Image (cartoon, rainbow over all chains, first blue to last red; front, side, top):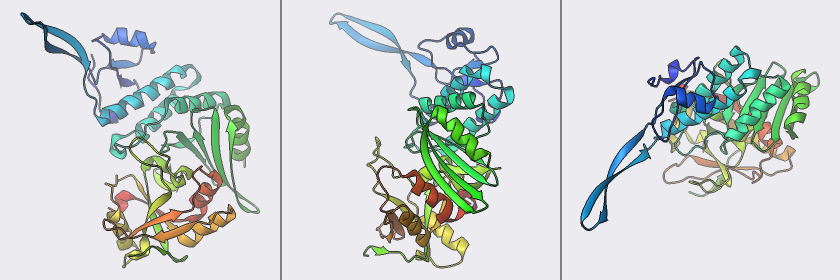
Length: 210
Length: 149
């Protein structure tokens, strides 16, 4: 198996962690995840076989082997969360250019850097990130910047221009909560609302064309 | 010490985790409105009824000294890429009035943090319009923690 690369080298091809219930080859893991060929697999949290002496009868002592996953530290949990989100991106790979995919991966690496997180923080919800991807594919808009995560795990993105600052929060419930600040000829206007994924496409287009 | 309202001309500093900051070319340009939502109850924490901040003018000295003191007064270990967001008290209250909410910013000294202050009156169910007004109009300075620590 390939060794895990440090986060600074986690560029294409994607290297991610896999926690098999038993040791598997890279090819088996890749096939089970239906991953593109270019994605390499490494195991950051291998299972270990533990020997547990168990008394089955008063007269006979026998040893039973069982698989038990290693305790994942906080950093590994965060890394695994990042990997799961990258796997979601891979599921939409046919809709993304190489540059768009790379940009999203870099944003994920940046926002999910362990150096910036606290133990009590809630990781981004997979359903929320998946809705961001679905919306991006539907609207063909990948121009969002500054990927963020709320205290409740909602995924946050922003669009920035001279005239407009638009933010959107994806909670994974089919609704986008958005806010807008627009500099117009009459002054600065503020608005906020919530829309379905589909309708937010229209909202975003309206504000982003200002 | 008793709880006292902070003068409108004064300021408070809110610690903002990196994931709630909006950056452009690596520089903090704003914060997500979610930085001004009250946190609901989680596994480790009770729900918030106010936003914790540090009273800027509690400390004397030049701006850099005050901000450093505010950072040091925080009870958590600040990460270098977190933000220290200074807000004007009068502007905070003004945004509340626009949303027909009476916001209060009070100095509430604690033994572990004599400069502790709180923004009170925020709704339990997030008001995104209020939060974006605060994020866009009440912030007077946003610094990366690494520039202050």
